[in-house]
Image (cartoon, rainbow, N blue to C red; front, side, top):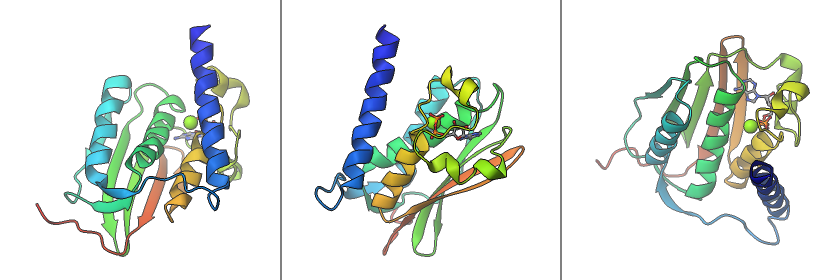
Length: 187
Ligand SMILES: Nc1ncnc2c1ncn2[C@@H]1O[C@H](COP(=O)(O)OP(=O)(O)O)[C@@H](O)[C@H]1O
Ligand SMILES: [Mg+2]
């Protein structure tokens, strides 16, 4: 009963967040502040290693601090959703990696896994609310099918976008957050 209540709570939180992001003109749901994307990803990686020991994680060497205006709790939620997917939608032992990169005009987070991948016909639809590739199997893995919809809405609310490339053995979600002024140095 407690587990079910927790699941319902998460579902409700996701639905409320999506509704607030949909109504963003009325009420901006983000609390923007300058935050270090590299540090945030490092913390998400630590949490992943603690919680998902059966999915070896590599953090690819970052460019040092990457300060940009964001809602750090929400971007953490995006990264957590992508990392969770890399664990729950792939077999145990599947390698996962996360990388922060600075590209012209933007900062990127790439979450990659070596799992079975997402079939071409499903690639656009996985961002739809409640869409799951394998309806029967995903259920016992705790997903409601809202994780990527929430991630995409949050990234769009930051003016960014999420891209997906996937072949068997190489699935990569790239979050691109635009910045006028990325400061990778200042160490
Ligand atoms: N890394 C991944 N590898 C394989 N399939 C994935 C991956 N990430 C997402 N998917 C597919 O996309 C669907 C939607 O993901 P999401 O919105 O997070 O919902 P949920 O995880 O709750 O099922 C998943 O059900 C799964 O079928
Ligand atoms: Mg998910």
